[in-house]
Image (cartoon, rainbow over the protein chains, first blue to last red):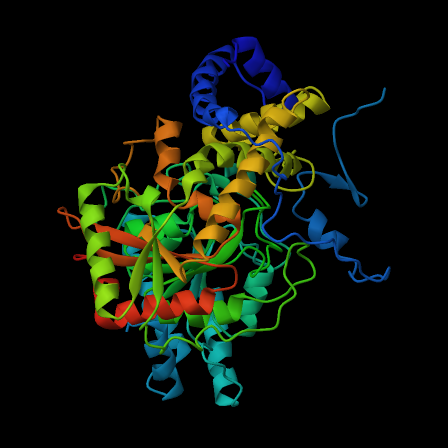
Length: 95
Length: 484
């Protein structure tokens, strides 16, 4: 498998990372090198092997449906790039 | 006082021969003198550290001191600490003053241990040399032309250089053990789920685990007593009774069965590392242990499986950095998508972007089964190998890293070569097992060599016993870099 420049640009778009033409060329070589390392796993026969997501096979815990957190909106919004009246500001999406 | 173990510092404080303020000031003085050379810390705040030290002294005066009250510690800059800049080594969080504490930070505060500051690290813990940090590389105190390893390179360097008696680290594929090996200190990565991930900035959530870094196994046991514990805010935190990890330290090793994985002793290890590990095995035999050969045939696939799973989880976890709620936002943009794309292009470094892109690709439509599910199946095979091996032995022993510390810049342009420096550590994370690294000698250039111990699930007390008995018989762990 080998990624083309267009593949790299499409992945960057999906990942919401702006890349220049020059950067895309650099990433193409590096990502193909990394995929070269990854490819060896394709040769392994894993038929019938159960995928493992965590070391301990845990069930998700449930807790009572009760308020446990105090209101810390001011503290959390103090570290935001832009807020107004308790709202996070982003560029206009709907005209 | 800065050449002492936690155990010794704890005794000094208990006997009234030193105060926490004096101790903390001694370390802050060393940090001030040496950090410009080593770059181990991103943030130091002496007023805050000394205020915490004064509070610890007051607590001791009122008879409320615990074993480590007043002993200072440094924290990897991946742990959110209220009121402290918490950068994770990234431009993306270069302005982020955390509004809350990680569970690990809460635990150390409750123990009365003042913070000496936040240590430098590879950006978002992605790296094995500490060269991906936005704040510049950390230098290895044994040779400042060399890397300290990574990603917990600042923590490893500050302990090795005696800028702090202990530090916290995190380990996703070797990020506690490999830098500890390259800097000649002792560390432990616990069983997955023993230390809470709450407030520990996420890289690959099914692998990330916090742990202690210090000068001895005994110190790591004392620190794990503080760090470990159930926390309902981490969905994979394990509900287990509190343990005393020091309880087995003094046990003799007669009859201990040490497993030697033949795959770890095949080609790939440097000659000096092979010799030091062989000498450590001989030392263990003198202490009464037996050795048995074990097989981990699927461990050769661990790097490949890891570089699917970790980037996949990272691409999901790091999607939260969008310039809206915290951290960096690009100065100029024309619409919302452009703001996301520019913020992430400018805020993340090259290695982080590479991993996000790999993760995005392997999770994208049509590739999920071939990469992500296949890697999870390999993960099962790797974990099954360990389960089989632990039928025949109590602990597994081998090298921590294939080589000693390499030169700054030597591997930074070649991600694949960099990834292979974690070849002996990654399988342990995939299986979720506990692992340690402890110093076992030096190479011909005077650089430290690390010995890795791997235990079965929840065998931390046994591993600390195995490491401590070795450290009673040897003094590799007590050697300090010259001229620092």
